[in-house]
Length: 107
Image 1: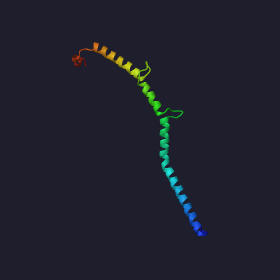
Image 2: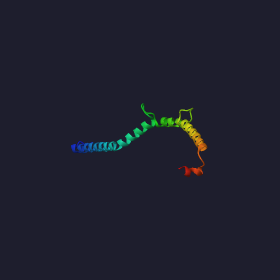
Image 3: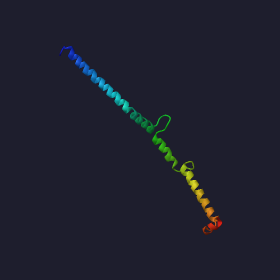
Image 4: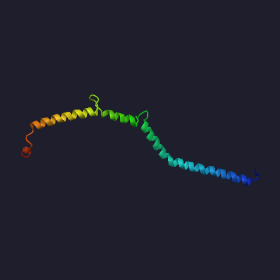
């Protein structure tokens, strides 16, 4: 081992410069990567859900439940009822509607 002060100054200067450069690089990397990390965390929170908002799979299950008949309360049941009513109205209109060849004369 050398006892030369210039040697030790050079070694410590190199070590300090290396750690400073590494710290600056890591700081720059974190600054550049932070928005991406935030987006990933937000995506994971939305996928799994939070205490105030259900996750994606829970919301999809709720939508899927609305598309199946359940005895009257689902959107599927309401559309089926509206379709049946529309068919009834169409049949009644056809029964009272004059012949389609006379439509131009009625207008």
